[in-house]
Structures are given as structure tokens and as C-alpha cells.
Length: 222
Image 1 (cartoon, one colour):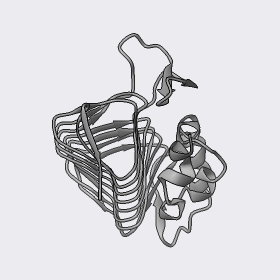
Image 2 (image 1 turned 45 degrees about the vertical axis):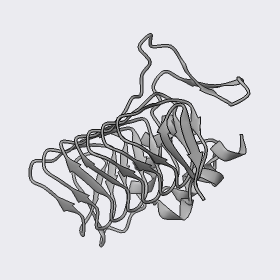
Image 3 (image 1 turned 180 degrees about the vertical axis):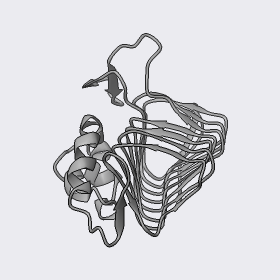
Image 4 (image 1 turned 60 degrees about the horizontal axis):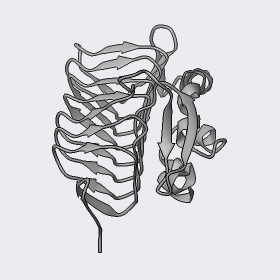
């Protein structure tokens, strides 16, 4: 249980939403509150550094936004972030400082910490991606079970934690590296500094500082 707490997955100093994350214990508790978090933060932003564009959309003046990008609010695009061609920011999204949202990426109801890169043909829904997380090309975060049931967090001992959410993506700790064409299944939690090899389908909790080669080959880093 300790490893999946916000304080052990993330350095909350690396996001504009740090005070809000500090109010909760587990990351999935933040997911239903992202909209309100953005609106509350946005109204307090320094308008010498940020512009309000449209309803509840705040974009840092130093951010780079391609002309083909679609941004639906509420959203905060933080300083020096880069949103590339044909990206779709689909409501309730925080993109952190120096983060990259790449070509044809879609993100909804998620927080990207500072310097995170979601750079090529990715989908991110109902998720929290920590500091310097990197999603390889074509990797997808699935946020809805096929039967539309509530998503549970399953612990190593078989115990299930209720999230009371039917839509929940992945919680990726700081410095997580996800290879190309990986599917992260609903409710997946990846600990800090863990690497996932390409072409995997990942579910459940993967501990920090590991290498996930496949579901039967997960080794600790040395």
C-alpha cells in the first residue's frame, strides 16, 4: 500500500497542482477532482505569465502551441510546454512545465507533471503521469474496462481496493519509461524509475525501480 501512495509515486513539487495532490493519499482520488482543481488554480494564475483563452483555458505565454492543436477547457498549459501538430487536449488537462504533447496525441482528464513527454500517437485518459515520464510512440493508456464495471486496484496479496470509478487510466511514477506500442490497462500503477519494454500489455501494480520485460519477466534494477 505504501508504494502506491501519492507521496511515494511523485515529487509533487514538480507540478502546478502540488497543493491539491498533497490533500489526498492515493492518486486515483485526484481523478474526479481534476476539473475543479484546474478552475481553482487557473483563477489564481499570474496574467502576466498566462493568457486566458476561451472558457477556463489558461496557456502560459512561453508555451508553444501548433496551429492545428485543439484545446478544450478546463485546461492549463504551463510554462515552456510544447503542444505539437494535431494534438487534442480534451477537457480537464494540466500539461506541466517543459512537457511535450506530440503529434496526434489525445489527452483527457489527466495531469502531466513537468518535463513529461507524450510525444507520438498516444492516448492518455484519466491518468496522472509523474515528473519526466516518457511514453513511447503508439503507447495507449486504457481507461475503461470492456464490461464497463468499476475499476479496482488489485494488491499483491489479492486484496482489491475500490476506486468507485468506471474510468481510470494509469498512475505513472516519476521517471517511468514506457516503450513503444504498450497498452497500460485500467488502474495500472507503475512505480518510480521503472521501465516497460515495448509491445507489452500491462495491468496491476509494478513496483518502483524494476524492468518489465513481459508479465513473466519483471526484474529489479541494480
